[in-house]
Image (cartoon, rainbow over all chains, first blue to last red; front, side, top):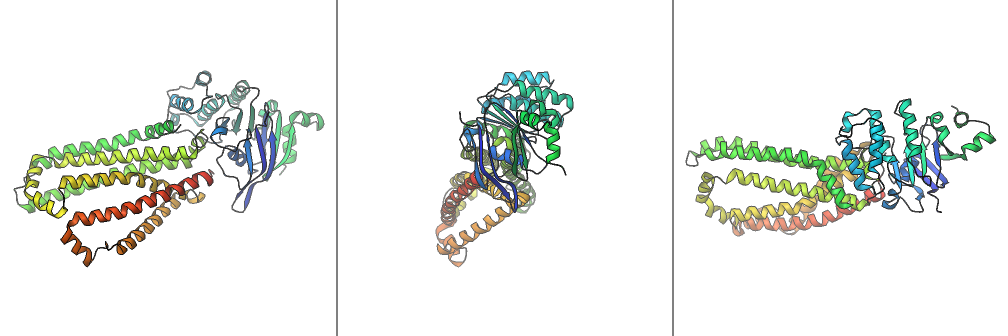
Length: 232
Length: 267
């Protein structure tokens, strides 16, 4: 089976600053991968390149052996670190929007999750709190039967109780052959669900290993290792 | 996919467009029945002029404002939907950049054409009262002589030219915003500058070609106007500007296509 994600010599330069520099990584299917690194390390740049929101300066990124385009966007379900929905729309209109554009969107599943979270589908987004908007976005993204979920800071703006629900939502709503690439600073909250971690520093990959290897070979938690590697 | 994109683009603007044109049509109906129908064209011309001038100024302002409102609607939709946070969703939909571009062009042209048609309808509502048509009948032969064709035919030709220009106007707005996005720190300023630079280039090209084709207003053009009627001069200008617009619109489309395909950077 083709790897779900391949980056070869991936470089992104802004003026004189390299946000990503010659990054090489391959991700196989069926795992939850933590994309970890300090602020400005290049995590969001990598995620945007995967989603075709940035044009690489050099190198290439392939999803299921295809460059980012309409075909890969059918496979990738992306949660950005910001609110990307039109504030004037009602939640139910956004559900229709996703149903219209994504063949793999399961409106029934989204409806159940919104009900669990007590979010009124007739509400306009602008009337919802920041945390509730984030939950709506996550519900939309996780209600797709995608092959690759790319989640940029999915739990950053919500309270700890909602975090538990979101993590459960992520774990229970993805196909086992799918891959989740998840970027976050809240390592302790997600550590138990991760299969693999990618440490990224100054636009380069500094570690690509499984969580089990970190625990057995180094006898440390991912959070402890992160604090040691990225010590200020 | 294209149809779905167009559907959501049209849905986005329908409320604002409806309000703007509702105001325009209501103001035209009120203007017709409360003001224009009451004008006595047999009165002293100075009295007519003093009452009609502020009314005309007000309506010119209204028509211009609605036109600018539609242009603003197009700018905001294109910019917000493709280059701000909303772009994170728009550009991750399973649509090609060509489909995204054409959805915006088609929906924008639909708004633009509807605006022109409703503006024309509002004008018709304003000036088709019996008192206006009877007064105009007295000077119609003279006007026909000056224009070369009847006023109604002349108006129809102007309408067709305006409609034909809708696509190029829409693409010009979009290409300026697309050029602006090449300057990540100053996207709006970049778009405004692109608009002014493009306008200067167009003016220089038009001026140069008018001189080459002997259409530049001056002693010669004045002779043309007197001898061959204003409409012939106008049509010559229309043909020239039409040719320039077609070439320019094609160039603008490919610039926009290149930027959105190769230089898209949502930061």
